[in-house]
Length: 547
Image (cartoon, rainbow, N blue to C red):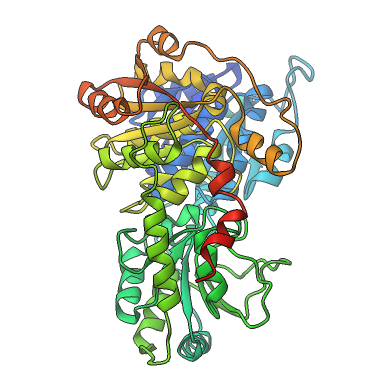
């Protein structure tokens, strides 16, 4: 059997359904092997986009998504996507080609040390040096990509290894591995700390989202009555319509939710990793933190938990719930009053007729259109904070955002992958004009695949988030503005539908119409970010926490 055929069989053995990528001369053997495989090869218009798509498949399924690229520039174009998956806890396997290693024909043309380049942004980066080792290398790569904490792995398959004949081989089965459970002394200590606290507060992070521990956490909340909030990547683990949900920590500090956090004497931190932007700073001696996660805490100046409960998250929460009893001295009054003030605040401007459209109206209209299981994929920009803060997620992984690497350019690619994984669900990508243009060429991929997706471009003709930061630091407006194409004509040139909102009241109807029409629909929405300075600043806390 040819080694490339064996490589594809090993991928099939891992349950791979899609491979995203841009092929090149050095991986034509792999491409030929894929031609007769049940794996669907999705040609993308850029390697970075392919990596974003593969990472999103991993995020949604828990199984490593796969991206393919050639050597040199093809491989280096995957680096941002590798970091995106690695920091965000998304299992992904990258396969890159390489010149023959046994006999060089072209000197060092296009050759860079890809495995070394990938090592800092992956969990595992190896060159395959012999065809018979392929099954072991593939199994090990997927095992490492998918085990906690999930992330990116990389395999390099040289051209001469791919074409060689393999006489003997063995495929390895995917055996389920039971994760270790937390040690009973840590569980008992956690119960003591929670019962002894006056105002405990539950934080739900990305780790809980990955393993879908929502039922166990919901039982814990319903049994104990302890209020909860989440990080941006923990949104939707518990239905955010729950009466004890306080909100999402979209900023590091100085927001409504931080009023509640400052009153908590104990934070039960479930599944949060400080790779994600921290939702609180440990700066008060009287405030304690319990770290519950698959892995130990990474200690930092702002994070040094007093107790670590390490093991399977769902099992740890279940063990604590079974031993924990509601305490008469628990006081959640301030939390619930803060929640009421936040709810009132969230309704402001949701029906604004202002043009350009204000973020609150945009978020409210998207939420009203989508069903409970509809998926929003967010690019990175100022609007991401508004969606994280104001959008209510009802189910896990229905608001896909990146708060780890926080890279621009992933929104459209993520929407394509989400629609492939869940073809029956409504999917909308929300992008800023800056992020959209970084990988806008994937409109052709979406049209070619005949996908039904909506892409909303929030246009402010500049890098709005950085402008907000520039303003908040007292710097003059400089270096952040640019020109844009006519987005409607741009969409039509790819074979998509295009609309531009001229009145705020048109937005909701146009989203409805786009979903009913089907196909790829681009909706341009002029956006007004002036409220950033009034609402998402330190002024907010001064107005809200003192009651």
